[in-house]
Structures are given as C-alpha cells and as structure tokens.
Image 1: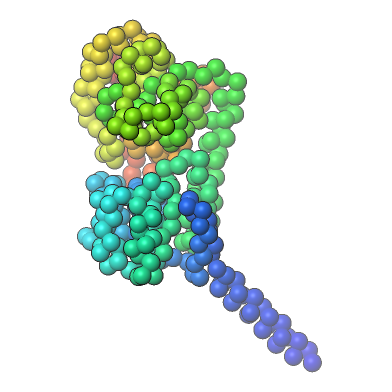
Image 2: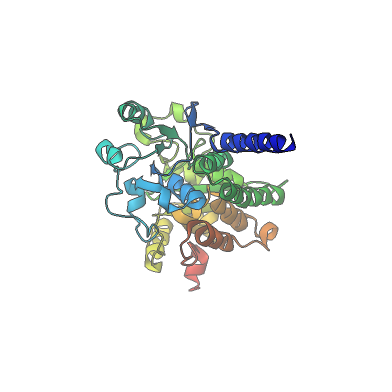
Length: 351
C-alpha cells in the first residue's frame, strides 16, 4: 500500500511538472489584444531599435532573426548581425517576403509601426504579430516583463527592471520640491522640438525640467509641422520662452562623434539671431547629447543626465556616465566608448 501511495504521489508530481512546463504564456500588447503562446519563443523579427535593445538585454541576440534598417545602420553596436537579417527599411516599411523567409515565432512592432497591415499579411502564414513600444518610457516595466515571459527570461527581465526603477526612484526622490527649470530640446534638425506625448518630453519631465513646448496641442497644429516626436517650432517662440537649458540631440552613433561635429553645432547655434540673449546660451548651459545616451534604457539615462545638469547640487554624488557604462556593458554586451555628451562652456574652455 505504501508503495502504491508513493507511485501515486510521484505521478501527481510529474503531472504538476508537465502542467507547469506546458503552461501557456499570456501577454497583453499595446493594441489591447491578449496573445497566448504555448511555449517560449526562439525566433523573433523585431522592428524598432529600442525593442531590439530590450530583447538583447533580456534574452540575448540568438533569438533575434530579423531587424529593420534602424538597427543595421550601426553594425558596430550590433556585432552579431548576420547577412539576410534585414527585413524592412523601417518599422513602417516591412519586407514581408524577407520576414516570412526567417520563419519567425513572432514579429514585434511598436505601436507607431505598420502592425495592423502586418497582422493581416502574416496571418495566412500563422505568424503572430505583437505590438510592444520600446520607445514609450511610461511602459518600460510592462514591456520588459512581457519580453521576459515571451522568451523565458523572466529573471533577466526582473534584473533590468530593477536597474530602471531604482534609478527612476532616485530621480523622483532627489527632485522632490524642485522649482522646474525651462528646457528647449532640439532634434537633429534646427528648430524642430518635441511635444507632450513624445518619450523625449517624458524624459525632460522625469529630469525635473519643463519642456518649453509642453502646452502645444498637436491636434491644433498643421500636419506639415510634424509629429509630437519631431515638430517644427518658431524661433521667436524659443526666444520668448528664454530657456534655462538647451539640449541638442546628436545623430545616434555608437562610436563617439568627433569634437569638430559638436563645435560646428555650437557655432551655428550662437550665430542664430537673438540666441545670444537666451539664458541657456549666456550661462553656457547648452549641451550636445548623443541619441545613444538620451535614449538609453527607456530614456532613463538621458533623464538622469539632464537632471544632473539642471540641478548639480542635488546629484553631486551621481554619475550618469557610469550608469550608461553599466547599460552598455552589462545589458547590451558592448564596450562603453566614452562620454556621449559635451557642454558648450567646456568646449570653449578647451576642456
């Protein structure tokens, strides 16, 4: 009888184990759909560099079998890319023939990519589409948690979330009660900035700054002025706002830009009519910031950097560059090449 009980107990444990192994993976994506997978995913086509970074951080490069041109344009940052992995000129121009050829378990788009079209096109091939938006800083934790579930990498996902939430909590604590300073963030093209609804706007807010264009309603603007992420603004509006700080985004490049690249920007900025009277220019609070730093880990590292520039007394013991080094070396598996930003007053002083 005891032997029979032992056999029954063993059988129950085995069934429980099998049930755990076979437990479905359920996520809810940015489209509001609940998607269920019967096993962890091994092959993913990924659109948007931020999504690719997070999957590399959580599950490694082996699971990524296809990427768009935003990833392939910087091969030194993605040394594991192989020939044939390009599956689109961007998140809105997927090459479906190339996608299908990769035989992926899943295709991942951000919500501003061509996911609706992809669902219809790939459905006959039984290829599921998931909408997760790596650039949305407000969805960082849920995005990483979903990636951890999908790729059976929940422990690494939890570690990445801890890295992110710990630094965001530090920002919130140090900035409590601060009187917000005005920030003009300029995209690569002169007189193009960001509005509420952009991840760059959220980055400025997280840093304790006030985006000087935060009150512009995109719905009232002519379409030709652009989106919330890259919006044409009037020079007069910048001068009127008298920003305390100007942050100019550099073209994203994993290798550091030469100093001459930054010097040319500072000279162009100082030559703009009326800018010599802007507090940010007069006080030397103008920064040239590489996209890789600004966008690092859901723009958390960009926010940490801007917060230290705005309120140095509150962040005297914090080194955002060291946080960037951790992001690149511990989570992306690439070498930290050096500081990704320059301050105008340092360049003028020959530092």
